[in-house]
Length: 214
Image (cartoon, rainbow, N blue to C red; front, side, top):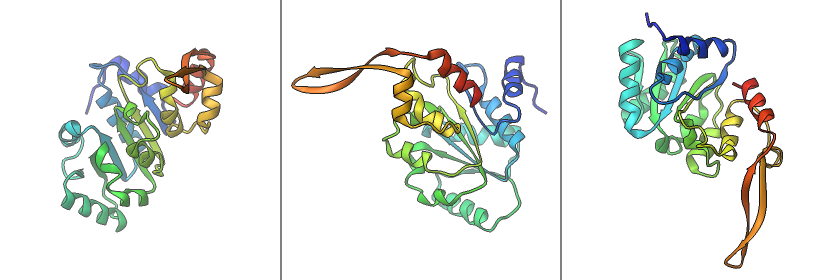
């Protein structure tokens, strides 16, 4: 049985009953355990963890060490991925946790067929550019539950939160998000006009909305 630190347990307590939540914890505060314990609480048969390529083996080892050895799969391996999807489609009742890196997700288009699963994004700030292939693909998935983990969700730039807000279930358009929370002005550079961010507004309201969508 895993014993969590007080701040980790508090984070889980604050999000109890929420099936879409974000844990923005600084490095060293143990967001890996918070995320995996939340996944355990949600208790879905199919679980997909998306992380940086360098972290795939770490996540696989984490689940094998602290949770279950036989049901964790490194989906960067083509054969393992194929077997994983076959088991998913056969609706085998066994718990399944697949770990894959961001750059492979949009190349494995069959992931779009997944349903009734928990999606966990490690370093969720990596989907802040909603126009990137990986972001578009992940935003197009259909999970029942979402867990976002990051130590630097925006780098102090609230405009980069929109894609993460959408995953958390806040159905707000990018245009309305910018209109309500981002201060901009049009400037001319090298004969071209572009929109420049000058600041932020309604920050307290933004934080309140984020708290509602945890």
